[in-house]
Image (cartoon, rainbow, N blue to C red):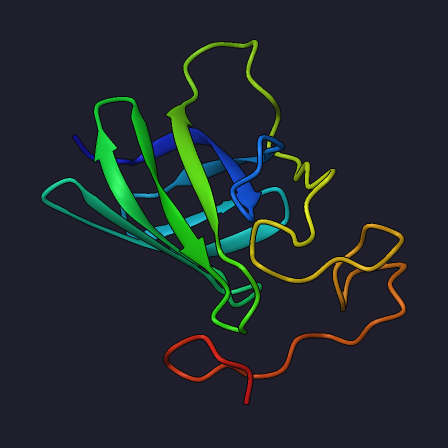
Amino acid sequence: MTISGPWVLHFSWGCTDDYGRVGLVFNADGSFSGGGFSGAWRQHDGTLLLRFVDGPAQYGGTLTGSAGAGAMSSFDGSPGGCWYLVRRESAGWPDSADSSAGQPADVAGRRLDSAGTAPGELGSAGTAPGELDAAGNRI
């Protein structure tokens, strides 16, 4: 099964019982976007890889039918996390807005400040993330 279409990604940095969520649309060309984020996806034999262009986070896991799950990392020395993905098929699902409430970082792995915004976002006192190397590390 291909991942193309609308999905809801639930993520938990540190693998706690508290999950943030964001609605994403996966395009057939290998790109995805939603909640103000974008990135690239690859799928092979049930394995799914996601890489955000908005931050250092990379996700890897398994996709089976209308659900997927796995682990993620920001490759900056901070704890990684867990995620699960569910195909969005009904009107009752969350919209595409990012809901990072309770998470130390947004879905793309950018650390949140005390106001709940990531560096470089409107209203943040932080700075935009720097350039990343091929492994996702800031350089």
